[in-house]
Length: 209
Image 1 (spheres, helix red, strand yellow):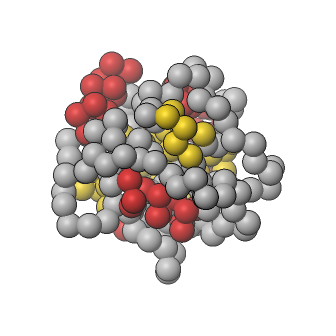
Image 2 (image 1 turned 90 degrees about the horizontal axis):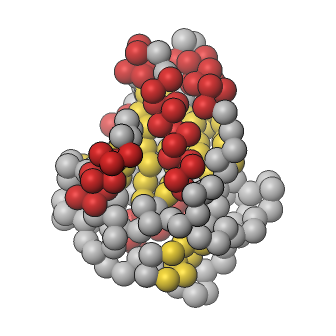
């Protein structure tokens, strides 16, 4: 995976949405048009605020998941793709997030939702993600959906742009977002070079408010 150079101030996010009437994600080519700019100025960052697009995604058991159903819960949200070849990128990020999931006190974990959303739905079907989660012993929710829905909410809600550079290769930035129970962003985490215990402390702090 070749990371995309971005300005330091640019907030990118990792959330997506599903739309349409089918409960089964479609396996369309997840290509981004060549004319898409990978830089977005002053993107809005929200998940449940008025005007935000609610995501309609599917977990590894093909259950529908919506952001609007997470009211009152702290949400940790990131983007990834299963076939990422760079161990310092998506694989490292998922490992850190798993440490967070395991490190949260039981009462805090019960009020926290952790979502990792694939932007490669052509290859990351619910069944493929289920096997992936089992092999890596992941203790959080992997989501997938329709390519158009993923792109729409990634762009409209978070100002995120990504680019497919091959059948299973994407250029993208890594951002993880923490939202409180009201859907307000309280922290953005860049990359994978961060300490899971620091994030556990931040989530616990907000859960106890």
